[in-house]
Amino acid sequence: MEFIRLKKVSLSFDMAPLIDIVFQLLIFFMLSSSFLNPALKLSLPKAQIHDSKEPQQIVVSIDREGKVFVNKNQVSMADLKTQLEQGLLQDSKKSVHIRGDKEMAYKYFVQAMDLARQAGAKQVNIVHEETK
Image (cartoon, rainbow, N blue to C red; front, top):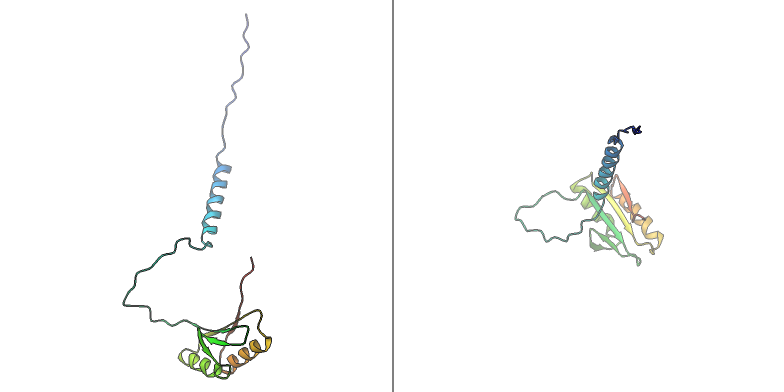
């Protein structure tokens, strides 16, 4: 009686493509997690010593009625130039960021940009929300 011998096939598993995919997934999740907003709302402790650096920007906000705010302080359009000049005297490298309500009249925006240039701002930026 003759038995048929089956050839043994060596089963090998190539790990290189699997490792490549794992590393790509790891990189993807590391990068995408850095763009997420923090989920925890923390109450941070207070300290007596604080960073004395002032912000390197002056934010001019204009609401839909044309009310002007410089760094959250309301000023009139006539006083905007003097407020910007005072802020730029402290540091001439500061940039002016103009935020405007989408419902405001265009003339307020143009006036604010013009006054920022007259006050000596070297860089005037327009702030907008990013669409998703």
